[in-house]
Amino acid sequence: MLLLIDAGNTRVKWALAHPGAEPGAWFATGAALHEGLDALAAEWQGAGVTRALVSNVAGAHLRERLAALLGPIAVEWFASSAERAGLVNGYREPQRLGCDRFAAAIGARALAPNRDLVVATCGTATTVDAVTADGRFAGGMILPGLALMAGALARNTAQLPQATPGAAPPPLFADNTNDAIVSGCLSAQAGAIERAVSGHGGAFCILSGGAAPYIAPALKIAHELVDNIVLVGLHAVALADAAKGE
Image (cartoon, rainbow, N blue to C red; front, side, top):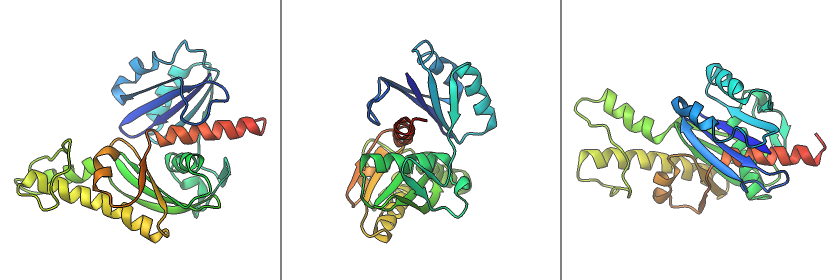
């Protein structure tokens, strides 16, 4: 059994996959905030895991906690490199690309091969990256995530409330302050993604991350909403390694 883990700045997501299963075809999945990690680990322990592939962008302390929970399981701490799973890393210093961004790009390419893609992952931060049809990570942009944008307004502007996105997006020109903040933040997120798509020749957009369902209705471009794109990418890496006998 293969265990895939995406340890982000806010949550830890995981999936279990049988050998040979296609990316995204998982036996079980789960997610929790960092403080709930110990209880979360109980869901994968005892599942016959023989290998774990982990993307961790949350620092050394969380890595230590994960290592202790994984115990004797063979673990690869996924890191960005010059090339992996058929994707060439075009970053100026390939190893400095966030491993979650590289994994997400690999996952997007696995789901939509041979297409120009924009991969937007909307979490604590929003990353918007370009992948070429011939398999090159071309680069991207990073901006504060939806909650960070709204929170920054609440903390740094007098008398503005903390805005929380609702079930439906507010009008573009809102008639109250809370909705005006949400509308502005959604417009900023959607605008960055749409600008990236335009700059990448009208590429197809893959949208993922915890805030993606809030942002998707604001987009005026073709896109696909995909859960856990980083895990999809890690799974694609594991299958590529298996195909090479690694």
